[in-house]
Image 1 (cartoon, helix red, strand yellow):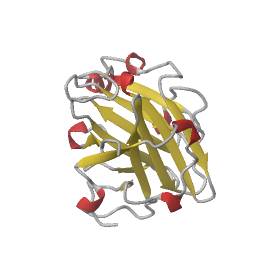
Image 2 (tube, rainbow, N blue to C red):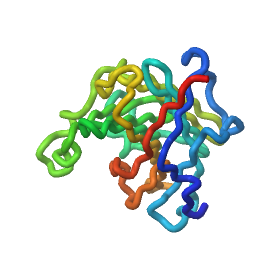
Image 3 (cartoon, rainbow, N blue to C red):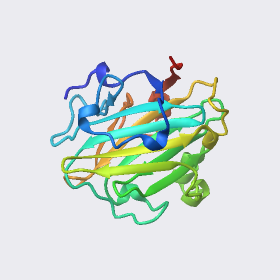
Image 4 (cartoon, rainbow, N blue to C red):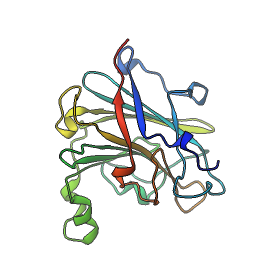
Length: 223
C-alpha cells in the first residue's frame, strides 16, 4: 500500500452510537466500511514487506468514546497476563490515544488480543520525564481496572479490539464541546518477529506520541 492522504485523515469524524454499547457484537472484516480508517506507515514511502492491514473507527455517546479496531493477522498473541504490564515489549497490541490540547494531557491505552491492558495518563511533559529517566513509568499508570472498558475477539485470520473511554478520563465534560481533541489508533504487529508499527495518524516519524500529527476529533451530531 503506497502512502496516500486517503489513509491519513486530518479530521476524524466520529458517528454517534446507535443503541446500547453492551449489545454491540464483535466486529468482522466484512463490516469495515466508509466510516473506518486504515492504518498505515505515513513515515515510509511504502509499507514494509509482510504488512498486515488494519482499520479503526470511533463512535461516541453522552458519556464517552467507543474505539474499535480490526487487524488482519493469524495467531495474534501477547505475553502480558495482568493489568499494566509493559505490553509493547510482550507481543501484539492495539493502542488508542486521546489528547487534550488545552491541558496538554493525553491518555495512552494498550489492549492485547487476550484483553489485558496498559493504562497511562501523560501530563504535559510527562513522557519526556519518563524517557529521560527522571520519572518512573509508575507515576503515569492508572491502576483502576474500571477506568475504561475493553473487549477483544480473535478469529482464524483477524482480531478485533474495542475500548470505551469515558470523557472523565481526561477530566472533560460529557460530551466535551471544547477543546478540539486529537486522536490516533496505532498497532504493534509482531507476527513476523520484530515489531511492525502502523497508525491512522500522519506521522512523519515512527513515533506514536507525536500528538501534533494525530487527527482532530469531530463528534458528529445525532440524526
